[in-house]
Image: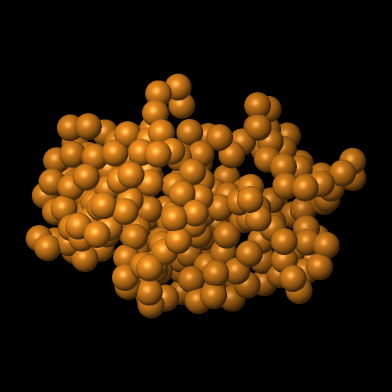
Length: 232
C-alpha cells in the first residue's frame, strides 16, 4: 500500500479514543474517529477506509449490526474491539464477518499486531510473489497446489489441501467452525463439526512436527481454528 492506510476507529469511549488515536498515528496510519453506528456507516460510505476498528457497545446500534451492514456491501477488514469477552460473543462477531476480535483491556502491541495482520491480508501481503506462503521450512504453493517441508513434498488429499489453503489464505485470522464447515462442505454441513475435527486431525498428522502441540494449525477453544501469523 503506497499511501498510509486509513483506519476508521468506531468507539464512543473518550479514554479509548485518546489512547488509540496517537498510537495509530504514531505508526503512520491516517485515523478517523466516530462514536456512533450512524457516523460509522456514513464514514465507510464516504471515505472507504482500509480497515475498521469497531467497538460493539455503541450508543445507537449494536456493533454487530454495523458489522453485518458493512459486510453486506464491502469487504473492508473489521477488527472488533470489545469488553465482551465470552466465547459466544467472539463466535457471533466472527460469523457476522469480523476479521479479528480483541478483548478490552488490551495491550497496544497486541492491537497493532492485529491491525498489521488484517491490513496485510486485505492487500494480499500474506502471499509471496509467486503465490506462496512460507512458515519456517513449510512452503504452501497455491498456484501449483503443492505443500513442501524443505525440499520434500507433503502428499495431501483434496479435502486436506482445501482446508489448508482456506486457512493459509487467511493466515493470522480466526475462522469459526461454522465458516470452515460451510466453505469446505457446504451450508448443510454446519451442524456436523465432527467432519472438521477428523479432517483437522488428519491434516495435523501430516503437517505438524508434533501434532499434539501444533505450530501452524492453531486451535481457538470453542471458536475455531487459525493458521499461524508471521510473528508466531
